[in-house]
Length: 590
Image (cartoon, rainbow, N blue to C red; front, side, top):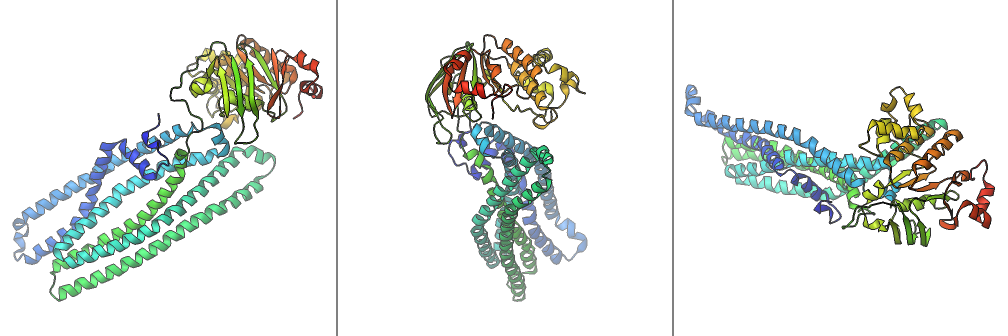
């Protein structure tokens, strides 16, 4: 269930920040209240200094200074002890709150992101997406932390200082108010452009990070082709746009700092000279001069605050770029009344199915196909003919344009995606493994599997022998995407993972293409035995592997053009017959 604030898009940074704070209302209130201690300290210091100066000037008996003014000194001590304890409380609460907040933001973003469609990840660098998630957590924390610990306290300091100045000298209080308004107007006028430039920089930085991860993920290919210098130049050239975007944001910020600095300097000079002249003419006392000039420290903080407001605008720009993940709704979602898929037979039916990629030419046009439960069906055709697309539609990785896909009479659009995929075992041509132990990778098909079940699945996949030969056996790490294993070893782990899942529907997409012929034949026989009374869909370029299939679907240019047994298809001498004649060493040409 998505939070209510996601129902209305686009999701603004402000709404997202309030969403984060609302999850911990008590803690947020405590952080706010304790952060005011700094404001009290800095605001009261000039006032206490003024009072202390006047007390010293008006005290003729130095020995009685403390006894005559004990209430002043005691109240000052109590106030500062309270302020100090508030400081420490803020530090304690913030040290426990912000790390948890960052973790919750990352978790929330991760859980939203993983439900984006298959197409989303085809269109976006995974490194780019990962960087957005981490960046949103960090920048949101910085925005909240700086608003609570700096912006709000400084704002309170200004109010208190203006009140104290008003009672001391209304004209100086008014002058501070006018300067502050000018200062804020300048900051506001620059803020929108600052946010835009920071967002542009975040976009370029995320792109660059995505390309970096893409290079590092393919580092073995880079070495094999001796393309280190090429990739170094490619990365250097791609840094140009990030550098330009960063420079624009930095230079614009420097110009704003210069303008604000000039405005602040003018105010300080006029205030110092004005207070001295006012004292010379007898309009104010020496204590008031100390108070007015002591309050100039607040002016420095205001300048510092306005600079941070600009920086915060930059962080907001970064967050806007990251929130693009949330502002893009999920393309494939469960029906509100989605049920759990129940599979007894494994019967698959396409009813008047039409599908196309991004409004391109239809690959399937009102296609009707029925695969009976427990049957073994081969899918053949040249690369790009539509075989994998057919499988992806059954898995609902893409949404069909019209029609229905039914499993045991249940429309896959009306069941949850989780229950749909839980009932299908799928072995892709290029299996992915996590950088976890072999045991964990096999058990991914059945999370609660016992060690005995894992070993049995590995044995059926002819993986037991090579696993036992590894130094840490089943506890050996597979490496990133299985990089520590050979292609054949990865495929056998993937097969074991599918076997242990033990579903009524099994799909093999070139599942044994990286294996030697002897191992391939042994595994195929095991798979056929294990798939007894299960629905089995097999994509293969080695046509001889399909001779044991009950039926073969022949794909060409995104459509199914022939359907029948091997003998029937050979007899009609159509496209399948040509493929059979063309195969070399049992394989179709690419």
